[in-house]
Image (cartoon, rainbow, N blue to C red; front, side, top):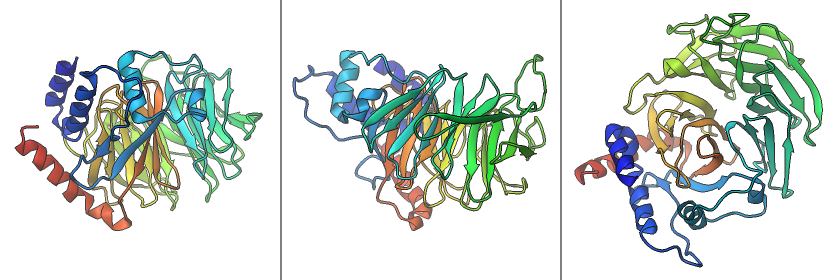
Length: 382
């Protein structure tokens, strides 16, 4: 199996470089018998030592047991190697994440029909069932949860207790996916992914629908299906910055497009390819407190970080089942403390990372650190 992983990394050099040290560490762990009381090993970091760490893996969340138990990194590795079965109330297909302002409560959309609530402040787990393929999640200023139910083509709103308040939709919604609430301007943005077959009833997808807080459609962003500026090819996720600019992952065009509050195209991030700053299938998008843009790439199974000028800074993750690695990530969200939450789809969990050793000025210095790390791996034959 490890031979296959390394072969895959040779074919995808932009993924291999910052993950090879972590894989080597886990190969050593796998070659020894599982200890009765495992000693804690160092968590995954990017870039790898001796370079300045910018992203550090914290933990994973997969089920209600994680409310009361913060499983160590070593225990997670041991459980993976030992084949320990997870509890039945676990995340299966995470498609959306929403985190409260203080980071104390995490909501996860499980595509099979539920939303999990992990309330770490009060040590409570709860679940909203009976949903029709939930995808995008977001919270308003009152802490109400907005859930995009893709199959029903509508948005359901729940209070902090999990009680349904209302729902809204529009006949022009075709295949809603991601959602973002602009609290300042009072707008709700919904990425309408659209469809590829002729069964589409409305043929009005491949754009971003704009609603007011009453759930009334007031406009849209996008010029229809295509690959020109302002056009989309299956947009999936969306977020807004503090100025009200809208970031949309244009998934099958392998890019992120940015628009001002009036819907005017501003700039783009990325293009199709396997080098730095390029994408395969970008999905989730989020911003940290410095205005840096994080994009989850389901194809490359990593998160790429760009500064607000569009320059790629670094990436973290990489394809694999071990804690801290990813398989086809979907949504990403970031709390006020720059903790990063990634929906790790095929690994059936949410990974939590944190941004460390970083200031606003580092948004323009990080590339040097990462280039040095890559150069070191290249010289060593990595």
